[in-house]
Structure formats: C-alpha cells, structure tokens
Image (cartoon, rainbow, N blue to C red):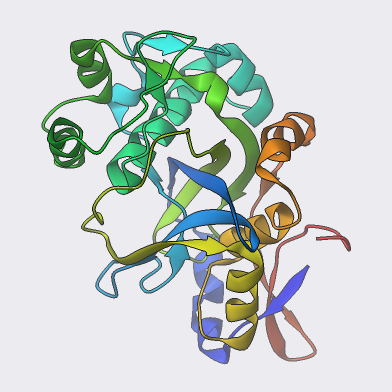
Length: 271
C-alpha cells in the first residue's frame, strides 16, 4: 500500500541510510460497542509533542526498564506466548505487555488488572486510582510495585496481539511498536485527560476513518490501518480475530515513483 506524502519529506531521504535507533513501545486499541458500531478510545497529541504532534493515537508509549522485571504480578498467557507472537525475547515480551497495560492505565484510566486471574477491577474512578495514574506517569513508582501494593495482578489474558509497526528509517525519533487490542472492562470508564493529549474521546471507527479521508482528522499510517482493520468487527470478535492474525514487522519506506514521493507500507493489495 502506497500513501502519497508531501514533497517536503524529500530532504529526509538521506537520513534513512543511517537511521536512529528505535525504542520498544506498546499501544493498545481499547474498544467498546456503540450506537454506530465498534468504537475505539483515541487521544489527540498536543501540538507541542516532539513525536506525532496533533495526531490521533491509541493509548501507549515506550517500554520502561522496570516493565521487563519478573516481579510484576501476572496472570494469563506467559511471556513465552507473547514472545512467539511478536518475534522477540521473553524479557522484551514481558516488558511490552506490562507497558501496554501500564500506559493504558496512565492515559485512559482503564486498568486491565484484578485481584486474581478470574476477576477485574470494576471501577477505577476513585481518587486512589487517579493518584496512581499520576504517580506512574511521573515515574514515582513502578507498575509492578503499584500492582503488588494494591493486591492486583496484570491480566494478560485481556489483551490480544494485533500488529507490529516500526517507525520509518528517515524519522529522527523512532519506535518499534507492538499493537494490542482490548475490550473495555464492564463497569470501567475512562478517567481524566493525560498531559500528553489535548483531546480524547470514544470514536466510532467508521466516523473517524471518514474524518481522516476528508482531512478533518489526522493519523499516522499504523493508526489509520489498524482502525480500518478493526472497523468491521464487533467487540465480541476482536480478541478471537487477534488470536488468528499473522504478525510480521512492518516498516514503511519513503520511495519515489515517477518523481512523486510515497510512503510504502508493504501491506499487500488487500490492506
């Protein structure tokens, strides 16, 4: 799949020959049923952000070193399963899953954790949860220590592996990002807006795709493609579909065809 890009990006072509190192990251498509079909929770990044300013994104962020620690309380598929799905080491897989749950909590207030492997936190609106979000965002404590102190375990079984995207080589800030999907737990709702975003809302995926097509909303290709892939599903189908997906790394390339610049996602004709 090729996407036409501005001519101004031509100055970045040479940077692809010596790309910046990429950082492991995780992002989560949190979905729920709505009147217009499946909805996802989207945040619009502040215009002042160094990476993807003004773009609509899913909750997520970089993997912190403590995310890889083995003392994170855990239930559900072990790191070895996620390592096989994403093609990485078990240590990195542990970090990716932990970062996915932590960042989702920090940026939306949705917490994929519970007292045991059979239950989940039913309501995260209490002040204690909101204080924990701020403390985690400020790196005043690790996610593992928070879960342990709160008597909670990470529910890895509430996540599905969806995709693997790598920031193009010409970008100065690059991420090696694994995409997850999750259904909004019953009883939970999103909390206050995180500092990195100036807007956040539940959006019917059909509507947000139409907004991107008309230019009234902006998304990076990985977010746009993921929205398209999920738009035709119901929340009851998402995790099942995730289990059957073949995941391979996708690193868009800046190419020139007949003097015009394109971003080639190499997704095939059906993408």
